[in-house]
Image (cartoon, rainbow, N blue to C red; front, side, top):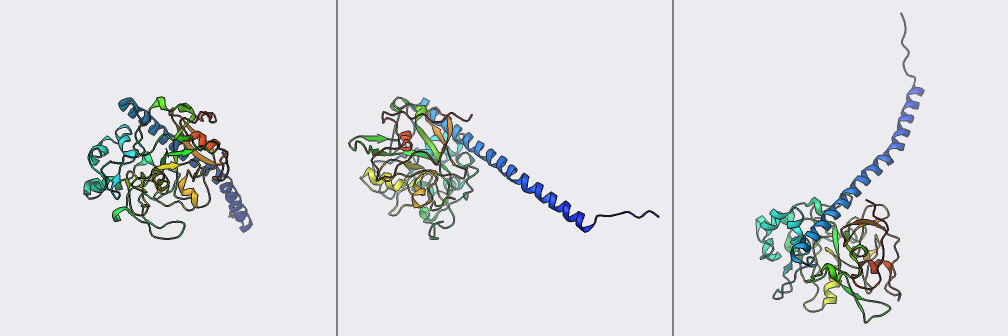
Length: 334
């Protein structure tokens, strides 16, 4: 009778060690491939938003406003952000029609169950797959553990893409103001982007997983409150009259980024100001959409000067539409 020889314990251990080493070697490559796929999807989302922006411009001869502030609105009433008028051009026509955003204010929509359901819906085209943010603004602040201040007690959908916002003075020449492409009731045309659309950032991304960035990075609407509502695919109005207050409060939670001197934020900051600026879970930087519709990747080491310095940075110049200094980005990755 022939006796079959099995594995010895040592041979089994050696096999397991070899398998473990192979898994350890392959896992980073698999994770890298998955992140590249997510980053590619994020780029595609921004490209589609860029196409929607230009289709909107073809129709109305202007880009959508950063947010719509009705002249007769009370300070605690809401305003739709740039995302909402863009919906018909971003494969969301039915949603836009059901929201009736052209003749309905945010507070009215929040009282309508059908519209509230739309505001709670997840919009993949407005979310970066690498973000890892929750689908609704439910939870606590990552920074201090305090409960989220939700708009009228509602938990609404979260998105990750933000528009470049507002005005700010040149530090070398404080009398000269620089404009970003999106702000309160803005109506920027292609011909207003004097630095060139290929040299100006229109949209980028923000993730809540950075320290101090609340889970409500942005939503499809805006609400003005006595305190910044920590939930917003839009902006929160900070004062009835002062545009400076509007810009500064808008940074806290919403679909706009204030990136000029006097309170500007960098990319992937590790402290509180990170919730004001751009951030992502992509390694080394963020995706940006330029005004010509191209998508590029800028690193978090891009030149950026603190508020105390008198030199205007490359990062700030990239966002200004008419500062007289065209900054050429790195070649497109497409």
